[in-house]
Amino acid sequence: MQTTPEKAVFYIPVKDFGFLSGEASQTLGRRLHAEFAAERDWGQFHRPRNLLLALVGEVGELAELFQWKPDEEPGPQAWSPRERAALQEELSDVLIYLVALAARCHVDLPQAVLSKMDLNRRRYPAHLSRGSALKYTDLPHGATSEDQAVGPADLDCESTGQAST
Image 1: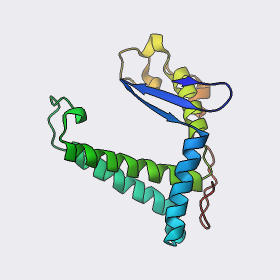
Image 2 (image 1 turned 90 degrees about the horizontal axis):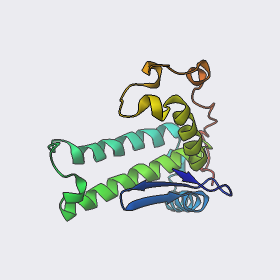
Image 3 (image 1 turned 45 degrees about the vertical axis):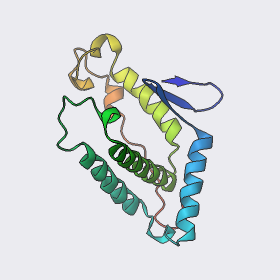
Image 4 (image 1 turned 90 degrees about the vertical axis):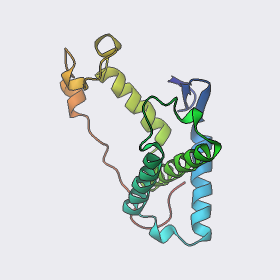
């Protein structure tokens, strides 16, 4: 993960594909979703619980695309155009609901990712975790008490009104 000092922008390289997200694209995604929902008067239904349950439902639909596929398969890059289109749609649905939930809960996703990756670097030092699937608490030196005390932030999710932008 690379960051620029000027803005909380993150770039996660995945083979030849990169996902660049930051303030501009997150704001655009929130705005497009907010406009879409407002045109349909759906804001009344977009409480954090509803958005979370919709997100879980979309993750389930995404999981269905992978269900019963053999592990030996080359993966989604070898799927038919129809399957790839379905994958694109479900991944987009997951991202849309995730961004909407974060907006409703006043979470800056790019900054949250940067903070979480910093925490993960401390919890999983490369020299102790390379090639290991162990949880940080089970690594040879375990986690520091500071790492174990870190929990989810006290989120102030809105239960009424429009999602913030």
